[in-house]
Image (spheres, rainbow, N blue to C red):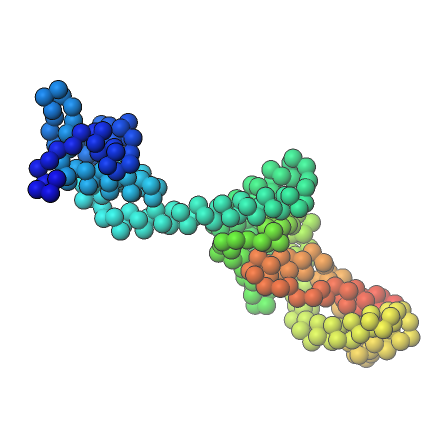
Length: 301
């Protein structure tokens, strides 16, 4: 073989490069590598160049590259590097899918559940990043359709779209759970109606939101820690630190209605789920503090 003139039979090539005779014949019949010559008995013979091509096809095949792409490489219609890049990306996607499948199985093993829940869990987790984002985009668009949003509400609506482009390569059961819960939440018509009510109340929000939230978390949480009842005398004192005692009654009533509208645990849960999906630790719940505040406003008028 050193001079490049020696010819090899199918059996010799099979033994030389570790392939079956059937595979050698199949690749030859597929047109990947044509015989260099034939023996007097009609058997296919191949030269050293053909043997090297068989070896290349074997290597590419073991890397998962299909015969169609191999044919392009051999015909110099594509380089090995180009084909390898395409297949590497395909493998990346396959690996992500397998890791996601593993996370779903771990979640199912932990949660148990009915056959229907198992099927739904699998379907939701298998959604692509584009499909996941489409679910959220349609939710936002349908929820706020026909409502004139002020600048603050527009910012919030955009924030509500902030799903990660991809779940992590190795999503935790917590993140799989978060996506499933989020997908269920955004299909709730009652939740959508509550968000529309909150968006419509944004004019009140702009007057109170940030300062009121800060004061509520500071003072109402302290009241909860100290077991101060909202309807007690001490509760009134705490309330006066959050809301000025001199606020007109009509404005106070409006604030009360706004608080009962926006203080919805499902809205807070939405943000917590988005945080989990983005790999962040959710902020502590503000609902106990606002529940205390609403009760205090109701009790003290």
